[in-house]
Amino acid sequence: MNRKEFMKYGAMGVAGMVMFPADLLAKETKAANENRFPKPLPFTKKGEWKEFEISIRINEQELAPDMKIHTLAFNDTVPGPELRVKQGDKVRVIFKNNSGLNHTIHWHGIHVPWRMDGVPYVTQMPVMSGQEFIYEFVAEPYGTHFYHCHWGTLLHMQSGMFGSLIIENDDDPIRKAFPYEREYTLIYSAHDVNFLRNEINSMLERMKERSYLMKTGRFNAERFNVFNTKEQLLDSIANGYQPPYLVNRRAPADLPDPNWFTVNGKSYPSTPYLYIKTGESIRVRLINAGTENHHLHLHGHDFWMVCDDGLPLPQPWQRNTVSLTPGKTYDIIIKGDNRGIWTFHDHDTRRVTNNGLYPGGNLLALVYEDLPKEETSVGKMGYLPKIALDE
Image (tube, rainbow, N blue to C red; front, side, top):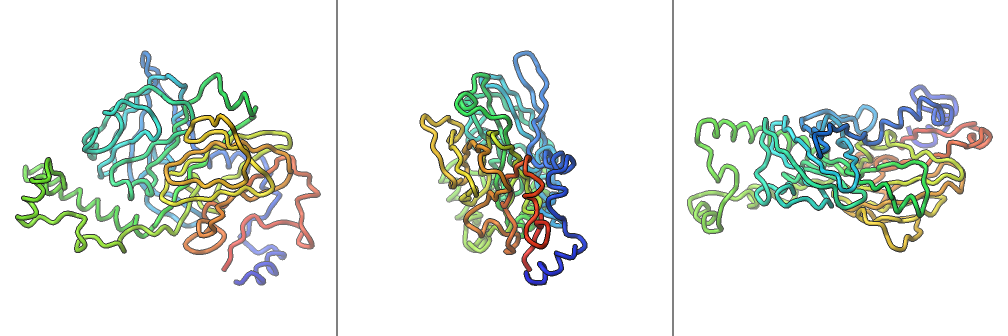
């Protein structure tokens, strides 16, 4: 169906089309929307420590209606649960690996002891399937941060191994300068679903082989591609060992080419809404846990940039577009001063597609809850489509 046909038959109420605004401002829709944001992970207080439990296993994730992929999910969710603590808290995270693959957790932007940094073969050994590792650190510095796997990072991060880590302060400098009523966390990522499927299956097979060799005492450094010195590596190469980076083992064509783009693990039309009211200010925490640049643009408003990598800016500044590069976090304040329903999207429109089809990807909306009923209809159709797909 082309766009003309869609508009023609859409006005007649084509079966399966979800219409706006009857459900967009409904209590049920707002309640469901809360599940599109990371959920704070409960902790147990053990003396001075706030103790969290995080596990990893292979799970299934629905990116958009009827589009499901297998992911590596922290506590069965993508993104993983949100760790929300106070500045100066003693944090203990018990990490259990139930996935069949090796993993670590890196605390991105957190000033942890170096042995807690989660970089395999630099600060710790990888956590193998069936094993656990305990991370301990003091929550510093203040602000918006995140955590992710640092083993097989290219694969594991786009497989869903990321989550937000928010360090709060009761004397919040941002709330003082920009009193806000509520906040949202948006975590951006990009996925090559074919790469994910092929690589995860391949790695699972390799790990089965390695586990068998370890049990039978035949596992060696070459099997794990680990060497103590350059000389040891060169000796192995001279004896026939082939490093994994050689052209005959991996070519550039094997690198991922993302064709799905997500916000909090979802692509449009399953992306979350940012609800706001006239006169209200909201805080939005932006995290790029993926490999692509996202040039995020808000229609109808300027916003205040207030934090950069969690750090409060000494001089906040107004913008309507921000470039969120990989590994970056920004905090913005949006003031409800232009009532309506406004697009918040990547201005590189390749990132607002699903498998090449526009609209999709990281397209979402800023929605005013106090929108009068007379403003919710357009033209002769009498409504706006909530979901419109371009064939």
